[in-house]
Amino acid sequence: MPGDRHLVLVGLMGAGKSTVARALGERLGRRLVDTDSVIEARTGRTVREIFADDGEPAFRDLEAQVLADALAETEPTVIAAAGGVVLRDENRAVLRSSGARVVWLAADPSVLLERVRSGGHRPALDADPAGTLRRMHETREPLYREVADLIVSVDGRSVSDVVEAILR
Image 1 (cartoon, rainbow, N blue to C red):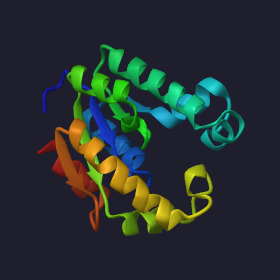
Image 2: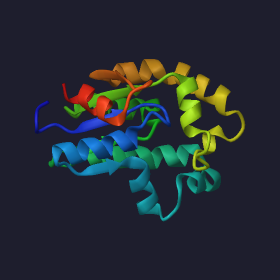
Image 3: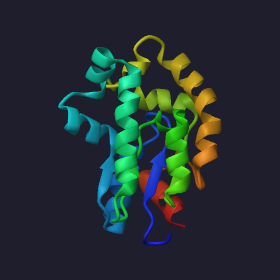
Image 4: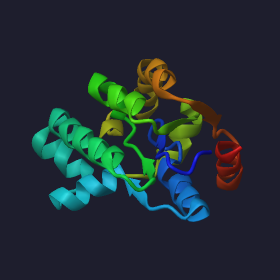
């Protein structure tokens, strides 16, 4: 892959964006930008707290700003984008126009459910995890396809296998 492009990972929660991004950053010698972590560092609050106190629209505003800031950096980075980043037209537009290579880490909702079951930091899954993940998958799949330069299935694959598939 060209060395002067950002590499952005998108996908549903539990797809492994943060883990794969860390491995890619190490492999490529690039800095990692995890949008959820940046939001938490900037606000001094967790994603769960932001959702609870300010609501999803406020979180999505922060998410859009962090994504735009990361893509505006001149040094090529590996960006682990929040799962819902594709929900806003402006974010999909900036992903397409940025010249970044966007990789969708695709996974079956049943696989994601097993991965996120123990995580308490995902407020969207509080009420009905299986149903919520299924609905998110149905809603977001065409949006991930719209922005993706590459689709990599993570089902049954190790982190190193996913990294190799991205770098091919």
